Image (cartoon, rainbow, N blue to C red; front, side, top):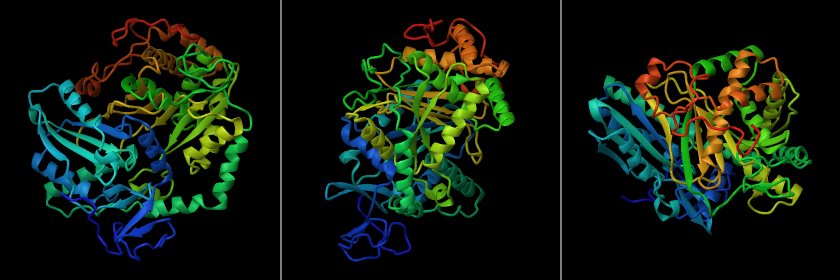
Length: 531
């Protein structure tokens, strides 16, 4: 199968309409070489390519997901649907090519490959996951250049079950587009089963790309960069889940080590947030007109504050940037990360703390089109930071809902690729339709202590439960009680709650059992800090 095949139709997102050597024929900074139109990378893609370029673990940008299906599936039609979806979604055709040593992207028209039907009947869930993780830990060939940037496996399981595994490069895919891909796949599957017309092909990402490139050249973008510069006129304070004894703290400085390109071995674990607690937080946010993620982020920043001995806390927050119709249709990588910094004394009421964080988030989201690299550059310029130094060691995302378009029962899980660029990435999301939320912790091995993750998750469960009982207290009052209860919080992984048990309801676990299910038992929450 040959790469570098291109459709020259002017109406196609894959096509070109220009003379070889002509630069920027469409105002996007594109170039036409040998009848191929190359486009520059978006802000998000550039950030991913930076990780890819400087990490010796070249799988570091692989985004991996396993979707277990629990309804009877027509295997033949599912295979057809997967092929058709991967072929018809324009962003799947993105390839990276070096033009004058600069990475640019083009749209290939070759037939999808590396999509396989694998028979794993008689094998355990752990066997399936181990098989998938080996694929995820394998870099794409040729440094990711001029090659298809996804792998898909359709896995035949016992009892007529099927699982789908996706390993895609973050240079061309994000979690939003992956969910869209899955939804579109099942829309095709239903059409094949019903003998009806296939759904329309998804939109090209080019309109969103064009708008993204144009706004970076405008005065509004410059004003937003200047806003970030003024926003960080006072130096932040470095914080970490490891506490003040963590090796990433630099004695006598407000900044710390935030990137170790030579140390990127990744670990991953999921811990549960019981549906009753999720429901209580949803009710509180609806009453107070707050975004759903605010209580969870308050719990995180409170833990970081107490562990690091400061009221000044900053973490990165991934923003999907899907505000416009073109962005929603893009399908590719649009995510930026913004820095959320709040100074909230412990004497602040929980309600006021939520308001402070919400307004900080709203201010940041209004400037979320500023590239993450430009925000970090502002910090470097303002405070003379050296490479790999900064103030945020945690990055977050909150994705509490699935697209309702899937016609089958399923459980979705992120899977590791064996590498990570951020010390700790905290993703709060559902795995299924049970009503539970799960926190996916992706971390750098040897940098973030897994015990710190367990300590934080227990603290968060206790903190949110205290909020549910009585939110009319100060942060310190809630955190102090939560600290005393944290060691009794039960940790549960998806292995502890298989799909059937999760869907039937495992009951509320926010205040039971001194012994955890993670094999470590009760944990002394005071080790390494005061949270």
